[in-house]
Structures are given as structure tokens and as C-alpha cells.
Image 1 (cartoon, rainbow, N blue to C red):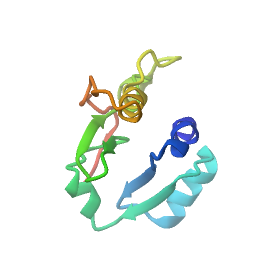
Image 2: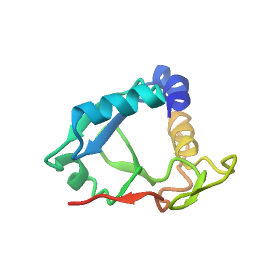
Image 3: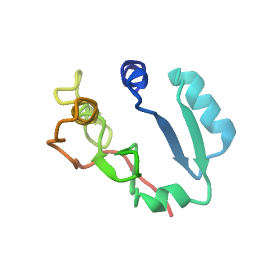
Image 4: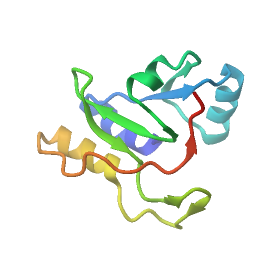
Length: 121
């Protein structure tokens, strides 16, 4: 995510992380451990989580200027089932969607199944 933010923020793409029902202290520790730099929200009331109908974490929602979801799902195929990862991702659906958007091209893949933990509501 840091690489995507660095590559596309200068092209007008904004990145935000939303943590459903997390304590600020836990998120700050996560940010320190993973060296995240993007702005974040702790969605304790699940307003954003419910708006996007997020079910899994991690899960990404790439939206247009009007809030319409252009891509939803996984970042890439690094995780192929819960607790199991490839050594290297072979597909990069989020970046493909962002790249298409920036180049004003149609987004070919608009949805993928996110692999992760279920969000407790």
C-alpha cells in the first residue's frame, strides 16, 4: 500500500485506511510495525464499514470522485486463503484499477474476493 500511495498520490489518488472497531493505540502500533504513512480512521461505530458493506479485513474500496465504488476486493493475490500466502503476488488488481482510472481507461476487474478475517458487527 505504501508503494501504491507513493506512486499515485501525485496523480490525485488519495489513500485512507479504515479500521473497524479498533482502539487508536492498537492502530498506532500497527502503523509503527508496518511503517504505514496514510491517514486512517477508527470506525468504532462502523459507519464507513457499513456504508461500503465491508465484510472482511483487509479489503479495499477504490472510489471515484463521487464516492462510487470502482473496484472492491483484495489488494493483490498474495494471500490466497486465510493464513496462507504466496512468496510473490502474481496479480495486482488494485493497482490495475488505479492505473486504468488514472489513464481514463475502463477498469477491467471491478470485484475480487477479499481474503482475511471477518469483521464482527
